[in-house]
Image (cartoon, helix red, strand yellow):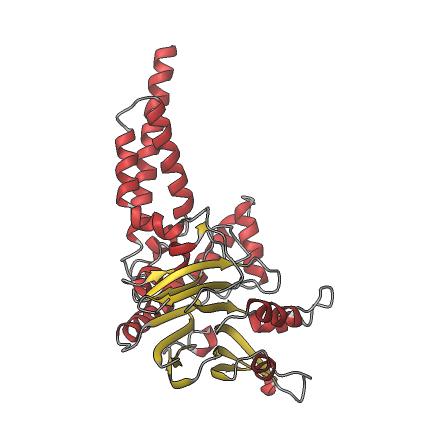
Length: 380
């Protein structure tokens, strides 16, 4: 009886190991399969961190039992190395410092969620706009890339974000407004603010429908830094447009409630829609990155995880500042899951990443990410 039970248990573990390994490798394929056609693989990619953990646990288990099945898990981990490397930062001993090194350029990317304007109707909580501006002042970046940037109608609000940011020491800016609020109450879009002169600018509108927030923009600015021109891009790629009801559906799914099936259909529908638009948008981004005559920095809210088609298509041969100098999982989004890193700073190979930091502030759903970078031929 004991022998039969052992055989059954081993077969169950082997079967589970094989199934998990297949799913893990399929999730890895997400990096080069366009989500327009392979949306179901893109959905599987969201579970990559958890699949990685299970595969790794199987590997440790088989090693402890000195089983040849350890080779299966090891092979999967080797084949998935590029995805694993994109997910985890290994610079655990590196500490960020406030002072910039000689020749360093400090870049901040932040989805500011309309500078907290969306929560003005919720009088139960404070408004964080002033704290957000104070944080920017304290970090003193040279370049700031904003997503979901907002400019209110000054006849209805007693402040102006552009003026207030300019006063912080950013006289140069390139702002594109993609959406106009009801009766012109506000404008929202993407923005680049710079301490250095902007000598030229780029604006590319995505071709998707406005009612699904798919007609946002990729913007770029050619910036003269002491005689050296660089090109900085920022963008807000297609969101899944989750509302309060969708977050409620996610809770239903997590808790395995009776209405889980209907809740799953609603969530999956929005995820698939987001993948399809984002896949086309990122192809446009990649084209403009590759055509740049100057060293490139690309910042933004990509609304996608590190093992996605979006991530690898934008990255190409570029470097992810988090991978170069960060540690851990690098979460940048405060909702849904602790594994969501969807805000990025990437650079061409001409740049060296000196340090990277992500600040888990409560002011926006997204955390600001900051990197100090330096051109490799800069004189020390």
